[in-house]
Length: 249
Image (cartoon, rainbow, N blue to C red; front, side, top):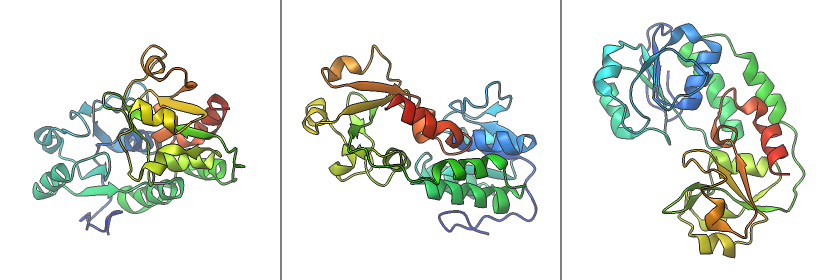
């Protein structure tokens, strides 16, 4: 059995204790097989009231704390987690399933395989609902957007990313993809030069708010959106399309 990157995942039987190092994967496991989840990062905010051990962050997980939880499987993501931490867990004898998700179709396929082959649980109904939601093609609006993910320095959503694919699938043109990198630096002057119709400001990873973000980008039109709708794969996908379409109309 292999994960999305082709690494062997040595599981003799279905896992009974799972640690998740990715907020969206934590929500997916908690929504579908809650009895399996024993640990998650401090950034794993969904579902609300999740009562599992916390193992620090996505980029600095507490390896000793994870080992103490005696997980049968750790789930991670190529973009969210460091190869160093994955290697340390594997060196400690803990199987790790690493996902790679750069588009909506990849999310649906990757999550389906994780549940079927990695977790060995029933196919979740929300995954079928998400597939139905995202199947229809959206008409191109011709509207250009830039979607910053960080400030000081300013960085934006670029090409070959899940968030870029989401923006494209709701009919928008992601001007950040023209910068030639996954998350390119893009100063305010460059954002203005891209002539976006909208600047999309998610509340994560940088917590943009009405008072923090639009102030530096005036007179560009800014719209605040939930980062969960833009970049979380999992149950969030079911409502994400309607949420983003409404907020960015």
